[in-house]
Image (cartoon, rainbow, N blue to C red; front, top):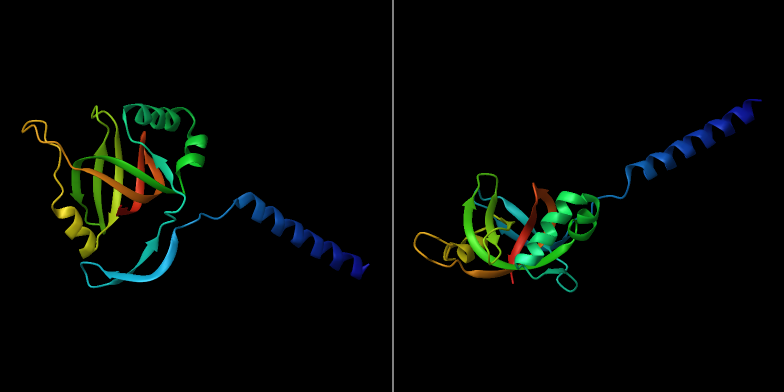
Length: 172
């Protein structure tokens, strides 16, 4: 009887373990870490991420693709997550805003030609990124200035309302 109880206990623990693993789903995949580092504004060494540039999701960011992305996020978030999140993305758009946030992120907003769609690009706050982003022209409707057209690689991380947020961005 004692032997049977031990076996039942072991089987129960094994079954519980398997169910726990299955119920939790797969782990989030992050970009591959490299041996390259940068020093942030506070003098802390931060490891760069290696984006999988060989096979990115390519977004030809025009008025139609923005509608497609926004509609997919709004109406079928499951499919939008499968298509854009936890993947390396290559996207081109016009710079409309640059925000130096206090959380170690420099956010660049790009837009479509009709200026209705937006995607948020998050760059790590490194000296290298600041130097590259510092001289970008930003769209200004009042002064009739077009923003620079930039292409970046980044990692699809989340949605902000119906906008795609891409992190760990690098200019192409």
